Length: 284
View 1 (cartoon, rainbow, N blue to C red):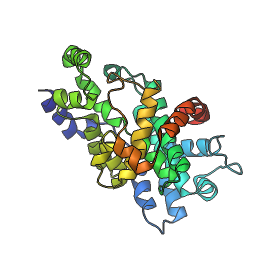
View 2 (cartoon, rainbow, N blue to C red):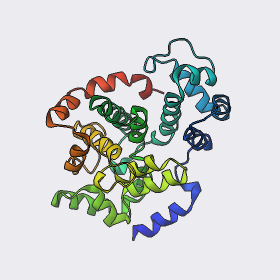
View 3 (cartoon, rainbow, N blue to C red):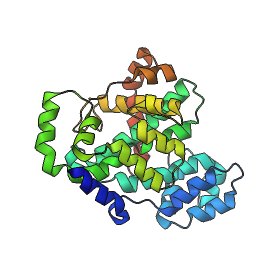
């Protein structure tokens, strides 16, 4: 049973995707309403790679800073803590998601592009439907939904032929096959990883339930937004993996968000524009 092998990997921290401790500490500090800007700048500056990326992206066309930014403190003062948090997470996510997942039939560029598009589409849905969710939170919630696939991809080889045959014979959502062959879905692995990284409960809940938003226990509305965004990006053909289009849009998610068929058509048509607007983030 492949589950035993997955369990062994999950027990070995050195074999799991890792994230800078700075990211976890920044997220922890930003959950406090009285966060100190100087303390936050000091924390971010402890990681040279993240520092360089924050300054670089702060000056990009995507974030449209009103003046040149030279330091982390200037980034925080000019763009605000929420935007800098988003940049920190984008930088960390890029480090994890920049790899080919041959078993899932996903190249690194596809994986990163689809992850960013889900994040951006989530933000756009929140803004368009005037939902009571911070658009920055929607963006970061959509960013790491595929991270669990990085762990499961290691275990496909012995069962890849059986998996492909089952995909031909039935139309069950692919996570059911993940569960059957590996003992876990990629959502469950994502939940384990984000919990270990000390991410906020809302983000953990989203990655755990973004394909089954009706099971969300922390923020069903946020999870529903990311659900719709992720399905739209897959249907567009960007980041479509071995599972294909096996998961339909949840009626629960449509009810939660108020998204209509006309909205979905509009969002779908604007995906190329979203991708063009993400050029700076795609190339970090």
